[in-house]
Length: 243
Image (cartoon, rainbow, N blue to C red; front, top):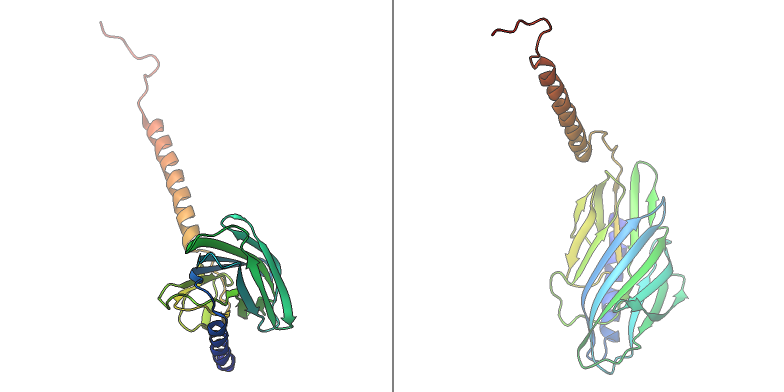
């Protein structure tokens, strides 16, 4: 993992420099969020949500994705303000995809535009049964945020259930074997990469313990009601009537 991070850190620096160069006009991303979900042994689905502030002269929003560790991106779909978006993405080489989302609507000065990008990542997961690695390339806006503030970029990356994360990039994150890996950053990251070990998932998880407890309480309640009903006194046959 150390060798990987040594490679990723300078790449992140180059990405930041590229983003600085390509910033233009008065448009900028105000917020970015990413969620990924593992869907099979190797692939993951990704949803990116952006909020942009754009000026009236902005006709398109530029994006790019760097493909690390033999990963691939396919099945891209885009919505702009909740409507299907017009976009174009092309492979520049085997490790780079770039493109733009066209803004068809007329925009007033400093309009807010919400963009959602959904895509499928191939070769996102490597799992040999003992260890795993998850690599999620980010379709990142090449526009700079107005300011680098905590919480600008939030993400949650799905990992195999019950696993333990031992390293990752970015290095500041919170890991949970049930809820994935999450963090919030001041700037965009071109890659989210985490690895670790696969733990045997115990049969008695917290959710199962709660379910079993509810079932046991119901059984106990039914048994108690039956016992009380059984002990209830009844009128004996042949009982004398006193007058």
